[in-house]
Length: 245
Image (cartoon, helix red, strand yellow):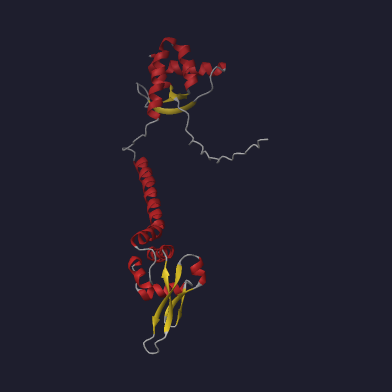
């Protein structure tokens, strides 16, 4: 019998699309499309609302393009209701209404540059400033890791304390003192010896140097440590983080 194999697929989180206000057309635009007076269009809209044919549109105060008062009341009409209104007024202008909606939709997809609006300029500048500050903070946060990678790429596999000072950019005494403080090494008979915890973590390796004592003629063993690439990267993070801070 063949046993069915279950397949687990990764779940991809889908972020919701940002909310966009629905597009509307001004009753002034409709009047222009059907070539009628704006007050005639407004009365038709109000009649259709009373009948329940369309919903009551939002009303706004706008500049008057014609003679009379400086400002007038105009309706903001949705796409579906605009076709109903034009069908009531002059159905032969439906094609022109389609073209006008296409223009509105295309312009809505393009960013609006309002160079003559101080408030828009301030808002845009603030938005870009916040992005730059966030990017600078990210670069500062990642600086230790970048420096650690640079130290690794510039160094051979394992290094003595003296050899490690060059890629790390610190003095030998500073390096040794720091490694003592973080519990990596200790002093034994004049040599730096690694703790087992640092060896197990992969930061250091234990080495032994054999030599003949000139006085006694006996063979002696001198312990010392090497810093691995992993240990070098960790030390680079420590020193660079201290510089950044």
